[in-house]
Amino acid sequence: MIGMETWKICGLALVALVVFTVVRQSGRDFEVPMKLTAAVVFLGMILGLVRPLVAYVRQLLSAGAVSEYANILLTSLGIAVLTGICADVCRECRETGLASYVELAGRLELLLLCLPLIKDILDSVSVLVTSA
Amino acid sequence: MDVSLILKVAGVGLLVAVCAQILAKYGRDEQATFVGIAGILVVLVMLVDRIGELFASVRDIFGL
Image 1 (cartoon, rainbow over the protein chains, first blue to last red):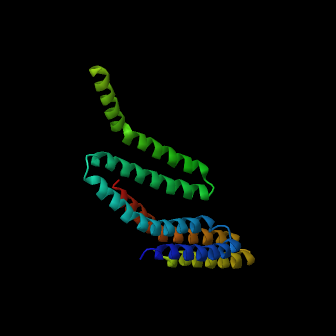
Image 2: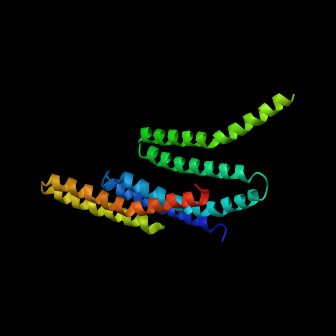
């Protein structure tokens, strides 16, 4: 049912807030594991929302002539989401160096993924130039 | 994946904090440190499967 997931996430955030505050007062060792747990639980619930959305977009784009490009688009979206999640968790635990490594890896892989598209563009430009 | 995981981790955290405080009060600081490390390892063991599930579902959804 639409809307129920938002209620669950909001309630869970408030429960997690109280639990974090109690645990933080008793010792600082458990800050990183608690943040990691919260990230895993919340992102698991959010991905449940993303799944039908991406399936719908994939279905829409699979029919046309752009299906090859749609695959590249969705794959790059996945890489961006994955590296974004990791980098956010690292940054929240005050490890900005790790976060920037993860983001750099994601950017480089996106660039690698885009190389065939750049080649396509250059090919069509060269066709235009030679025909003119 | 539910609120139970957060509560489990919080329970382990509170238990470890209490044990560490008791051990430190009786002058066994080394054992208190070991208890803290053991607690973090227990939580990580609980989390590793979930992190794997999360990454697997991202790969599944976006077709990586």
